[in-house]
Length: 119
Length: 349
Image 1 (tube, rainbow over the protein chains, first blue to last red):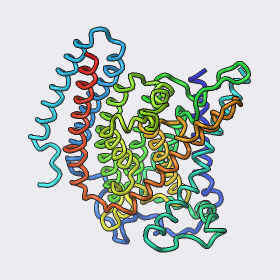
Image 2 (image 1 turned 90 degrees about the vertical axis):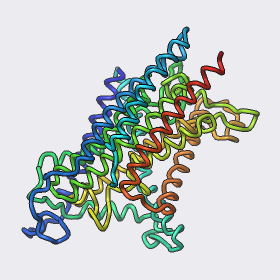
Image 3 (image 1 turned 45 degrees about the vertical axis):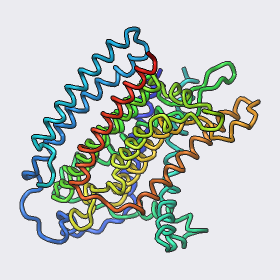
């Protein structure tokens, strides 16, 4: 029943989006000027392709995000399990080890200038 | 079964109707607020106090010509606004406007999608917001949109880390991931007058979360996704008429959903505002009504904070933004988590 409600919600949201998307397609005026459909780059004729090489920093940031986010996702069930645990000291030791590894990794990343945006 | 589906449909109408109906009001408040802060009038011509201005804007958006650029990747270009809007709407499915209550021998749940993992679901789907932006920028096949999308996306994922550390700390403190449990833990008063809100327990996490939602929703001072002089409008540059309006709507709904989550964690969610709990609740409907009023009032205050910050703080430079996210807020979030864990452990010894 819960997933049925989710699926109905998803369907209604999608239909709403589709209706909104095509409403101006039907109602809007249509003036055919060929140059209107060109690339908008401030009135200058575009040079080269748009999907050429871009800065490696974005790529590195994405990878770093993936690493750290997965580690934080591991902490969420830990935070939930802590309150029901009997041997809390064991969980604290595990947390200390995990966060030490995380911090060592973090310091390594910062020291290797992986996230240096300005030279 | 039929009754159940009817109940779901009513909930969906309420859950989608309130944000979509509030959207024109929020945009109006933003523009009038801008006028108020900058000592000018703002839109005041259409209708009384300019209240009909948002409707006029919507009508204008609908009747605008839809430009179909020839250089885009058509499928993804059309899919991107749809994904942005649907993903922005999805977290609303599990945000409760009021508490559960008994009516006619049945327990009524306020949220459309009831799950004990509701809070994780909300964060998971709201994090998908970067897909709509990245797809729009890439599919537009334009250098400005590509750069704008990359910048917006890198910014969103960077601030998601510090936001997540704040969530871990809050879930650790409350010891539950059930939204009703989290709100229940924040009901009541300390010393008879101070509400038991999360912000007083975890002020650092509250600050991280607040900065995180500003960056996640690409609002000033973190609106590096656009820049008049460098990349014009950013990722939605090639979109016109209603498709542009959909990105605009998605951004505001995303902002509303994240504000609602912020209030659930740090300002007691739908728990009653101080003063409202003096009203006697003899009728079964009075308490949910008061709870909904409290929640909506808190969100309205949050929206005003968004407007206020927008016209008060100057923007960051991009390297400052990334340094703040990675080198200040993320270590701060981790240190806050460590301090919280050690404090809770040694207090219970």
